[in-house]
Length: 335
Image 1 (cartoon, rainbow, N blue to C red):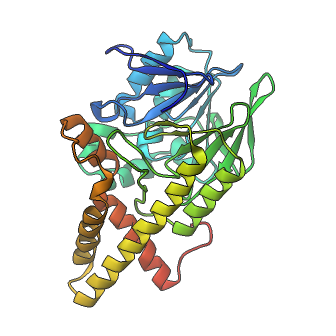
Image 2 (cartoon, helix red, strand yellow):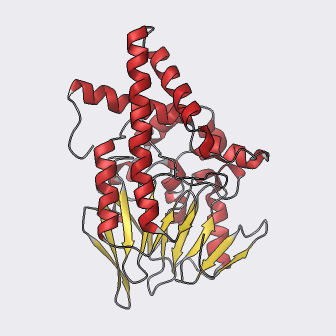
């Protein structure tokens, strides 16, 4: 993190960090842990929240917004970079608390916030027991309050301030990045990866079923074209050397994919089936990239953060599916 910042802590409201560019980070306390997922409030003429965290901890976000002086009619927009539950799971609850707010999401994901039955069902399969203990179900939002956007759409925050919304697939087909030219900041969601406390480097986020290397690299290039002065990662916080960070993110994606492919070919040669392939890829990634975590990281909360948000097996599953689709010729140009 960089810049002039101030942190207000406490159990109620949750931790809030103010940055000199006006952005206010709200810790969503995902999984009951700090510094896992951030929501970002832009206190513009039309106040806008980017990301809201999962349903089970959305009350923390609502408490923070109340403490920051936002009444029920004050929030204009909730922008979610994608519909994965750690980013958008609480969107229905935020919409209920702020009845005048419009929910902004990729047009590819909008229907799932209006009717989240399939989203909740697939998330339960992916997260397993964590669905009930960490995330919780997304509640429906009236169709008229969900606005699906496409690449290049803008969002008017008033006073001449506009956000540029970019289709940035790779992590997910329905991912959008948010560029605020007024402050030179990009809100990256999961599109460049994660950097939690205890991580020396940005680590890719490559879950199934949508991970696509070429699309991810193209999304990173689009951010670089805008010459941002700061990146805001959902997991977790700002980075003040964006050129270096974006180059690192691209290098990391290539490196993890190369290692996964090597392990995949080894497993194919050895036989043993799909379970063996996934296990071998996951174990190989764990071994090759273990040094990117602080070796002195011993406190339980830091370990839990990494296990919750950057599970090697989940990354391996996404990389494996990408490699299998590439081999089968079923990849599409945008993921």
